Image (tube, rainbow, N blue to C red; front, side, top):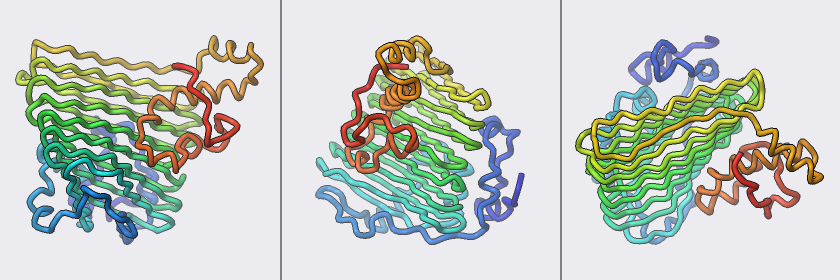
Length: 381
């Protein structure tokens, strides 16, 4: 591995994970080792932002009392990404939500800074509260962004959470999301990332007493030598919970996409309904996709399913479009749009400003003559 990770080990208080570990065996950390060994100042994502009605900063006492609770509930305090971020001890952005709050956008922009740029976010929704939140992670330089987000959802609360990662080909993105859901709460999580030399996303969700609803949609696009790695874990600690999870990946060049999705349904989680699907597209003979959806079920009264597909663009669909006068290159782009848009349309409305289809997939995948009026999806790939 080029460069050294000793300084990162010192911050985390633990060795950088080896590829001998199952959760890390497909993750190439070469890009992370190449990052300049220093800490950079993380801009306040709320600088210049007027908080909407219903959203307020948590007091230091509330942050101290609640910080780490979602990590503990998900048994992820000892995950290396968490240890690294905690070792830096970044300032915590703590937000509380009550009632039906207006949409909010948080931008974590590492810019052209050198080194490691850390953020720590705590979000607490009170009973019956609702919020639409877009988190944007950006970089335009050779740096590594680390973001740890904890979310506590009160009974009957609703959170529509979007995570949009727009990276640089020399940059790394390391994100860990821990969510604790109370009964009756709803989480709709949509994430999309592209452009990073290395990205790793670790969403962890626990329904603390069941009877909650979780929806997860994710898309990662990689090309050249890039590596994108998603490791999700959802656990039901009570009956009557539901999960609808879809992960999509597109790999081109000599890139690698990794997905490992774990669902745990213990005996206490009777009448759980959970589905998990991984769908991936290979655009190059040199690209590689590793996907492992998995279910661990102990309860006996459940409806659970999982599946995975890895394919190329379907020749019959390409032929259909070409037979109607659409050039081969445009036909491919239209099919890619349909594949990606199934996830991207779940992002909060504020994501439209970032033109995610154009910016995530690249200028050469412009999918309609007018980017403000994209073509309607043509169906599934």
